[in-house]
Length: 139
Picture (tube, rainbow, N blue to C red):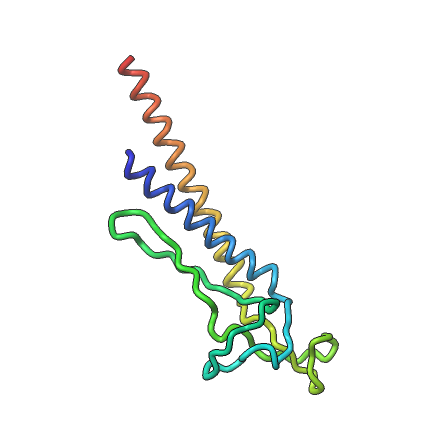
């Protein structure tokens, strides 16, 4: 029973971290930057200025001895060029750098993270009830 709780706790932490990453992406999907502030091609590995949003991608990874972790890696390329002449950050051609965020992927992932979180809460709750029942039988 302890290993089930241990695995579920690791899954709760991983789901929380993944959901936080996805929520950040969703909240900043319309955040833009000037094209000269970001590198929109993969050949240049320039650091982004602090005020520029950096999208991330969470990936679940199984632990060797049970449980799950999440690896959160930066999206590459971090931005894509879009035409929006009304944006205050647009250049003279109306181009601006938008985060390379797939909104649909992040929304579906957030729903999956929530389901994973709730399922593992149920596992912990059941393990607690089983422990309680076991202790009541022995008393």
